[in-house]
Length: 281
Ligand code: HPA
Image (cartoon, rainbow, N blue to C red):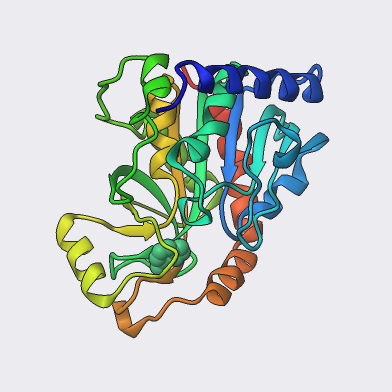
């Protein structure tokens, strides 16, 4: 059994390091950049870069295209802390490892989180290249970062996940999409552990369960953020149709290519969105 309070001590030490490294920057919004979406962090001005491996107790990113560093600075006039890359369960990270940077953000005083990823469309009416605002999640990873004595101690162990994606932030995302003319969908996100892509039968089952999109991240971050009282917005880039939908068989290459082709629209959307999220009541 783990020592009680070990996680809290680790978080304190990690937060001290990160605070020291980012200096005077007081980030108002945390942004996690998923597969194919990492280039957005290059647009941060006056950026301070802190590789995950230089923060005590943070795991390093091993996924392709995930740079694996914090980028703190100004984006669209807002002080932000971006994660250029994230940690996934399929990289041998525990649910607590995945949640760790989200808890760090909360300790730095960040109350709003935008988490992004590339996802497969389970909903056949979606198109590759669309963005999709998450309106709920189905956690099929089989993991939960609060299922841990220390984590449970940080706030109420049992807490509601109703509206885990904040309705007001979702409305702001629609506003930003309308202003920029970027096509967005809104749907239910389903998270799996991976790293194998799903079978055709799994995708049929997920559709029956009510999922619109599927990927291998986000759920544990959202649970950690809600437990810490943060407001969360989730946004996927539809990088592919999920297995079997219109005959699809997803590949990593396709996900990367679609990410690259949607980079400019993602930046336009985020430039409109981030100031709204920062100013939200
Ligand atoms: N399945 C799981 N994860 C993914 C997918 C997918 O189709 N696309 C991008 N990440």
